[in-house]
Length: 337
Image (cartoon, rainbow, N blue to C red):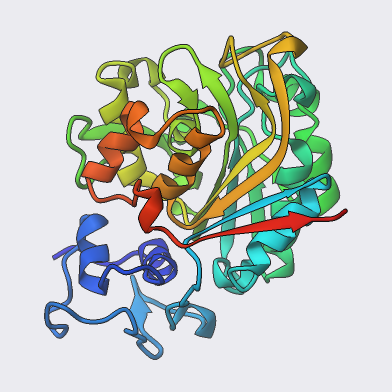
């Protein structure tokens, strides 16, 4: 039987707010239920002082949150306020970030030659808001990083405007040196069984995925699951059976929270863009603990449906989340005047 890591446990507690049972969630993570729990144990499972890999869990991690919504869509002109209001609908960032947790925020910072206006990189104020809220919730540290394919990381961090906002919020912009990518098995991977994954992302208690919603020449759209490719070393290998392998990466990383930045969307010539005529201002944020649901809703902003995107279809078939928008409880919030 596999042991529960602290991050596995925290993720399960957050995700158990949905309709899946605790044991189903364990199975989706490639874990086996403890012998002391019969099949069908309800989501109200709430251990006291449970040891996870030798650690005693903090009180905030011992009870499963019960959300009244599966996904929140906020619309307005202020990115930080949209993020705050969307998370407030779930009960606040503290529902996802226990006190003392180490947090990684993973934006899309793919190139060093565009500012955020070109919608190839995540909106810096959205990233800054997530860092600020995680620290307010009691995170011990918040790291932010990505693995650009155009230019150096440091150039991309500065040019995107993300470094400035992260530092102002109290977070740390981190490099991604080659030696920190470690060979890692993917539990439940269908086509991709192992990959060299970035250790800091694997070790974090909480992973917050914050992609920008944009066109992509190979996958049609870059959303939350596609954004996880920035956490692996050999991205060229992922481009074989691309849709399935992105879903397999999702099975490995399983973000605690996905926040899709649709403040400015790149509608064509992605992923790098470079022409403001390809940018559409939407002033929208999508937030969900279910990455499949978040990506599924985001497709509708492009006039598509979830099954139009290979990795969304594959991930739903793997049981990694729900792509059935009609079955989801979706709350829409208007922020500001």
